[in-house]
Length: 499
Image 1 (cartoon, helix red, strand yellow):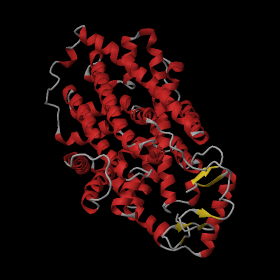
Image 2 (tube, rainbow, N blue to C red; image 1 turned 90 degrees about the vertical axis):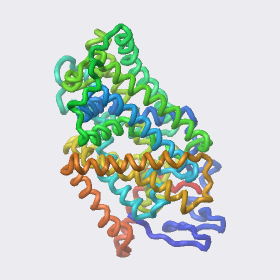
Image 3 (cartoon, rainbow, N blue to C red; image 1 turned 180 degrees about the vertical axis):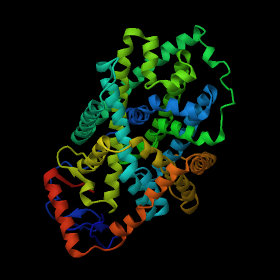
Image 4 (spheres, one colour; image 1 turned 30 degrees about the vertical axis):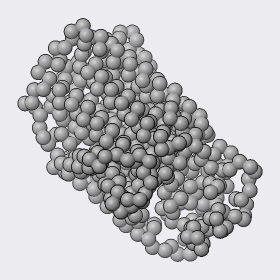
C-alpha cells in the first residue's frame, strides 16, 4: 500500500515523479499550473453544516433498531431509559474529548489521525485495516439495508417485502449516495441539511403524539418501570453497545477538520448543540414508544416506529417509514462524506494507494476515496450476515475509540506545549476511557464467541502491516503499482491536491 518516496532537505516526503522547492511546495511537472483555482478541498463546512453532519449521521437506523437491544439486555423500561441517558452523557464526554483533539491537531482523518499522532503508524494502520475490511463496509451496509426496508414499506403494506427487492432498493440508494459525494462537496452538505431537517420532522411525528398520550394519563406501561428481577450485570455491556451504536456519529465532524471553517469555535459548538438535540430526541422518542407499547410488544415488533405509527396515527402511518428511510439516507450520506476523508488522509500518509489522496480536477471532491467503500459494501449487501459481523467488531470499535481518548491524556503529558484552543477537564477523558474499556472487557465475559472472532479478525492487521507497509517491495511490483495508480488517475481525472 505504500508508495516509493524520497525525502528533500526540509524533511518533506515526495511521491514518485514529484519534486519540492525549498518552501516545501510541489514544483515542476504537469501538476504545477492548472489556472488560478487550486485543486484542493475548501473550507465549506460551516456551523450549520457541521451540526447537520453530526445530527444527520447520528440519527439514523440506530433509533429504530436499538430500542429492542437496549430493552432486552437492560431488563426493564426504567433501566432502558437510564441507559439511553447514560449513553448520551458518555457520548458527550467522548465528543468533547474529540473536540480538544480536533482543535489542537487540525488534520482530517478522525480516529486514524489521532492514533497516528499519539501512538505512531503501526497502531494507526491496525485501526485503518479493521475499518477498511469490516467495520465501515458492514456499518454502511446495515444503514443502507434499513433504508431499503423502510423506503419499500409503504408500497408493500401490509404484506412482507421480498428480500431481493430490499437489496435492490438498498443498492440504488447507496449508489446514489456515492454519486452525490463524488459530484459536489457543497451539494452534499446542502442535502445533508435538508435530510437532517426531515429526520427531525420524523422524530417530531413520534414525540408529539407520544407526549400527548402521556399528558392524557397513558402511564400504565411505566408502572413498576424499575423492576429489577430481570436485570443482569452481564447484559449491561451489550445494552450499552446498542445504545452507543445509536449515538455513534458524534466523531464524524473530526474526519473533515481540514474543511471546517473556523474550527476552534465551530467544532466544540457544533458538538455541544448536536449532542443536546440528539439526546433529547432519543429519550423523548423512547418515552413516546412506551405510551402505546408494553415492553413485550416493543420486543415483538419488527419495526418499532411503524408499529407506533399504526397504533396512534392511523392513515398517516404510511409517512413514517418514508421519514425513517430519509433518516437512514442522511446517515449514509454523512458517514460516506466523513469516511472518505479518513481514507484520503491515510493515503496521504502513505498507508493506502497514492491515488486515494487525489482530488477531481473540476469537482474538487476526493473521488477515489469516496469510491473505495463501494465494491466491498455492495458485496456485503448481497452476501454474508452483516449483523453478526457488526457484533464481532463492535467491541473493537469502542476499544480503539477508547485508545484515541487515551491518546489525548498521553499527549497532555508528552506534548504539554501543544496549542489547545479548547481544553476539557481531565476527568472527562478519564471517565470516557474507563467506561469504554469496561464495556470492552465485560463483553469478553458476556459474549466471548463473537468478541473472540472479532479479535481474531483484527489480528490479520499484523501481517498486513508487514506485507504492505514495512517490507520493501520488489521493483517490478512497485512499477506495476505505479502504473496502476497512473491509469486510475487518468480514468478518474484526479490529481494530487495543491499544497
